[in-house]
Length: 315
Image (cartoon, rainbow, N blue to C red):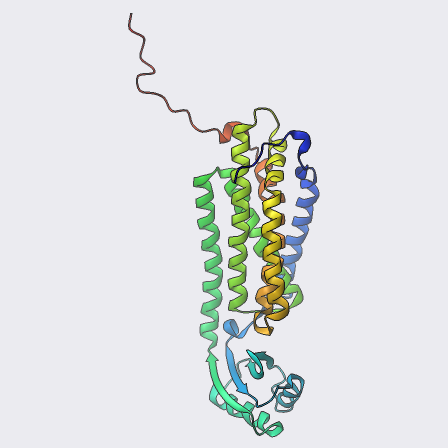
């Protein structure tokens, strides 16, 4: 898509707010790190280990009654939610020391049959704590590797100032998104980890578009300070950013309200990630590049010397 070159007085002065935005981002990051340190993440069974039981009812299941029945059977920590339909129920139970998953499944089924004899066991799965610890390490490693690869890619394609800005924006998005889950104590499982990785991809795409436009305008615009050229570039990409963000948010809102309990956390992470990712591509990546002193000379293509150019002319 070709963008019309804007005049300086036609642009939105985004960089005017870069210092308040950086203060806000710093406060959010500090708050997120504090929440991750003291509240910590509410790890799901995928990471902590435990027992997952799926049962079926002939009629719509009453989740509140099921929770009361499990509480009476000493399973008050069980997580109960619908799975697929109102007649299918998924029960997650934290690991019990010295009790096998099969025994836990029998005890849960007995407690449920006491309230409804027609309940049917569909499946039972057990995730050991060793597997959960391995998933935690592999998930953190996946995010770290993604950030390193992105740093290398952006540094090779653009310029090291843009690379630092892009990776800073991605780290900013991940930390604040994880902080949100720590503050709200939402369950963090593999679907949320997938959502966080998707947020990295979305934010990176937005940042690459903005960086590419900034580089192009540094080469096209002859007059103007780096701050003014960045404002021109952000204004040119504003329509694209708004349309992309709004269409993504509409889909995620549908998943949030209609997707069911199993996908609720996934939609929450992506909804928040889209908002914070759009913000960071404007006020974090661009501000970091400007703070590091990006200039026209840094982005001009290298001069290619023609063969024989240095030779003296023939007399």
